[in-house]
Each structure stands twice: as structure tokens, then as C-alpha cells.
Image (tube, rainbow, N blue to C red; front, side, top):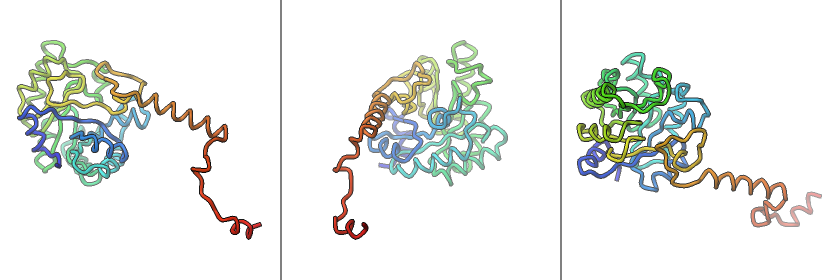
Length: 275
């Protein structure tokens, strides 16, 4: 069954947890869909785990559209959310609307995601009024890493916690259908989840959220430049890949690959006519 904004809201109402993973390419998208994951996020985390940038700030609209379109071709029933990259929505409501439209038309997204709470209320409202579903993102917002002074847990003081609650209420009022809570203390995330009518998706924010998201390279042990506290390795695929790459290299150098089983044949009489 196709996952939609309506089915995701129904999951919250029925207390049926929502699953989400990041994805950046066609073949991985097919595997994620076959595993039954309900939502896929083409996150601007591709800047770090795919493109090798130091952070997400360098990611462009063209990057997001390119990867989103590839992922969309691997999905049938999974709901596709695409990140709006840095400075694609902060400059004006008009820019936000135009760029959200590009992600829908060219990237084939089912929804867009943008960072920020109270300060992004008007942008969210404008995009939603154009008929584009918006997933909000509050707490630790990676695109604001320099302004925040680094990657830090959000809402640890009374003042910060109150701001986070106001952000959550603001994005819901603006029309967001879902909100990601990143690096929010578990008890505060639980409070916000109970407060809101829209689903919350946690990343480093405890099990009480309506769903969870992880970067798939993190949960498979494929990316070890930095491993956040909230990441669990569900498999050590990175180690398996390195072992396979080494085995391939060894066999090529030893001349044991390819074998006859991996080659094509031609009739001897054909060859004889060539000599």
C-alpha cells in the first residue's frame, strides 16, 4: 500500500511507529522499499556521506534534485521526503516556494523538509498553501551548525526547552505534516510528541517519538568519520565491503579471477579465420 501523508498521520493516531531511513541512490532505494521501510529521506547528509563535504552547507539544489530523482526511480510505495538545502529557503518565501516546487517536479519528491521552527513559519505556510507537504526539522539543525557553535544537544536548559516547544507548535500551526526532532532530550521529545497532533520523527531523541530516522551508512557501519552517540550499527557492512574489495584485489593480482566460469567463448573456426 502506498504510504502517504494520510497513512503517516494514521500511524501516529494508532501508535504504530513510523520507520524512516536516508537514501541517495536507486539501488539502495529498491532495497529499502523491499525491506518495508515506510518513508525515505533524501537528506542533505549526502554532503558528508556521499559527496565528502565537511558539513551539509555546501550541498546545492542540483545535488538534491539529482539524488532525489535517482531514489524516486527505485520506490513505488515508500513516501519520499527531500531536504531543502542551505539557502534554498532562508532568503525569501518566494525562493522557498520555487525551490520546493523544483524538488517536487524535478526530484519527484512526495514532500520537502526544511530546518527551523518559529523563524521558518511563514516559509512553511507558503509552501503548504501551494499544495506541497512539508516536514519540519527542529532541535539540532545541521545547516545552522556555525551559528549554534557546533553539533550540540538542543533544549537542555529551561529557556532552550521552551523555545523548542514554541518551535514545535509553530511548525504545526504553519501546516507541517510531520516534524523531525534531532538531538532533543528524550523526556522533552516525549512531551513534544504528546503535545503535537502531527507525527514526530526522532534522531537522537529517544524512543517515545512517533518514528525514527537514521542515516543508512551510519546504521550499516559504512561511515566512520564521525559516529554520533545515537547511532546503532545494525550490521557491519563497511567491514564486509572492505573484505570483499581486498579479496577481489588479491584474486586479480594472483590471476585467479576471472575463471573460465566468468568468461565467454568463441568457436575455434572463427579464431582460425583471424590468424
